[in-house]
Image 1 (spheres, helix red, strand yellow):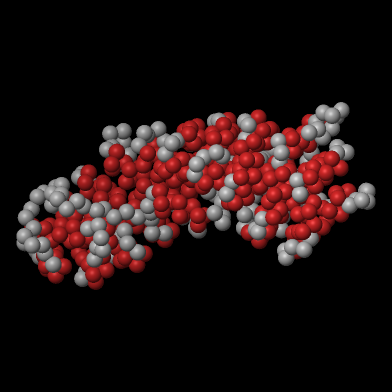
Image 2 (tube, one colour):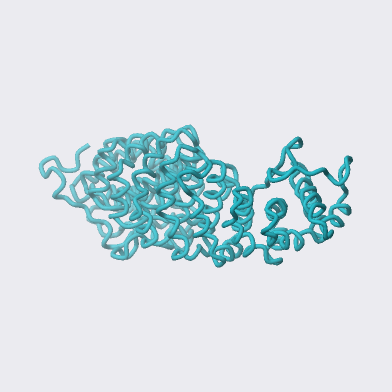
Length: 521
């Protein structure tokens, strides 16, 4: 795996084990924008509470509207300013309904007319839960909009009052406060940290009980996931780690929305340092998380796979926890999934396992992962091929000679050489390192000529010669050195090239091979 690549792409800005000078395990950096797109499609960061046209005026009290035609915004503002609590409630309810309509709610107009501070004030009317409910609903929908709109709610001091309403004796009021805080936390790391600073998290966790209605639990878990998300900077782990035992219990629920958001929360909490990953592993989620890799619901499978993939960017022991829970057998099927993004994520996950030790690589081989991985390398979409190339090259960096021989026996040279034509020079460098590692192993066993011929037969030498004219300096220098070392007529040039991984990483255990058979194919 190319060391100069680390600074160029950010893929290796965090390494797996401190004991290795440069590790091949790759945490999620450049892929995060793509994750955000997936997240937007599957589980929205903000949600408007849209009311049906024919619903009762309030689940807490049915009152007549201000007039039968429907009030104007001006009518609503006047009514909300009234000292008569009945008119206040009717007007706030009308305000909420206007903000809850499906198309083009007049959020900015309502803000300009001053409804936000009035709604925040109504949150404190503990003797009137119906009014609190309507005000919280209106604020929920203001906070569902742009960052500017959400900030109006924050700047008028809504967060502490909404947090206090999590303890409301009225389930409707508490649930609406959960929803509003979820929208605020979903706006970004600043808003998220304000909600955490107001100590909303322990109160949210207290609301999840065995008898909690599923609809309420969905909103709570979604809000929890928003309190865990955002990476730059991440939330204070000391504050959010209290979620872990609850998230572990939630993985036992049958509801797909609860499962999805619990998995998203875990995917955010595992996207970080080894100590964060260890805290997640220690809470016992791994068996349930791995079991969800068999989910037929893509909305659940996507974040479950992401969380598993993040865990295997950790230490060898953390990776072993996923392997011990049966993660490898699930990955066989996921490499053949109909969704391209799932295939790509599965290949990325495997690339972080093949970056491990010889025993872990052996378990990848014994699980039958190499044939479907090589099929992705040959026939997948380019993003998946790129991850498969990393997986194969990482195996060649840390595997034994015999493991590399098995890789060659299964036909890895053909799809590797095919990717030498890739337009993405970073991927070409990864492939060049993989081929170099294979040739180095073959050289140790006196089989370098046979492997060189195999590479030539699948068109690899022609492509290497073309790469000598590549615009990228690293690519053409590496290609030129490979040709001089392994494909020239001269002998004894073994030391002119080495993979760009660290010195300690390329360890071929020749004791693992059959000394009589050598590098057999």
